[in-house]
Image (cartoon, rainbow, N blue to C red; front, side):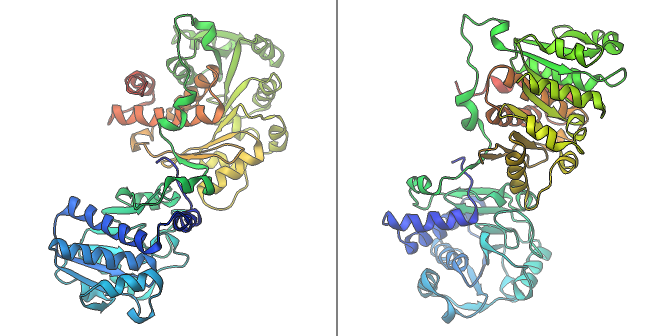
Length: 484
């Protein structure tokens, strides 16, 4: 279930289900029953206030209320608007509710231990105001756990952005597949425990929808994972090169180089300015050093065809020499990772860079670096997709909700990054993981997705006290847990 849908794609899935003989009424009944079951499983039978909106999300609320009451819970239900104005399946479900329908206001919360937010769901397109906002504020003020149906009201289902006001849910139950707003911040942080319920929509509808967005997990990239055979040797596993900065700025390159080696590259060389060779040599063992003096020297260093993947940018300094070195690596058709300074260096020369980039390149900007190289509007997913199309390479836009996008429209949202990754050098290790996988022949999109997930999982396994040097050391324990 790694596919992630837009709101419109979810509407399409509902419509397509009907062509398979699954009615909207049946889907709504299944959705409401699934939420009620999740509530009882998580919270037991508690006095519950169900807040229903005027659309299908409210229809789900009527079903939830009915099932909770049938299970033995005390339920009070409030509706935004008039019951007589409900239409379609929502009207049908409202008729099946035999209890009182109260107006939506704070009074419905009296005596409640839980609140079900079935007001708006993922399709909201305007700011919350009036009675919905006041009632939600009151629920929050009373400290009541809130169970969101599909999406916490006030969170836009595609972007994860807040429209006016949104509550922190204790649990969100959505249906068939998650929406992008469940994984993009700030919405992701408001969903609480996210559960995806099977409500009877056939998986076959995905063939018509053709989703290209995924939740990043091993099933996405394991088919491309490099396998080892008894006949392998260090040269068959690829040779990664990492460009080092000058004296006093070499640590970032060494972090990247060590990460590339740890993730499986057969050989790794730090391309070091001659002035920094001694500094690098004092810290490196299995990673080799090749000194260079000028652009011609650097091109000579890369001319060996066995040196097939290059990482440029960590600690390199923003200057013309770095731009020349990047263009040299691209001209030689190496697999390339551009990080940090290598992105910033082209802020005023992006068109020249874009002309040289190719499908075997990965760019790994954070938000600040991204803005120096790309123009983009919309949510994080839209901006990353647009950037990948514009430059013709894979773009990995870092953050707590890292998005990886390919020029062909595929995208993955990473969900396992812990806050401990907010530490100096963590991004250099990620760039090294990407480079090491490219060296082993993993396609760029899969390499970026794998590197990002492994980076997050290594940090999660290590836990508090993490520093960048720990990430590569924590990687083998994660690798051993991957499905064979």
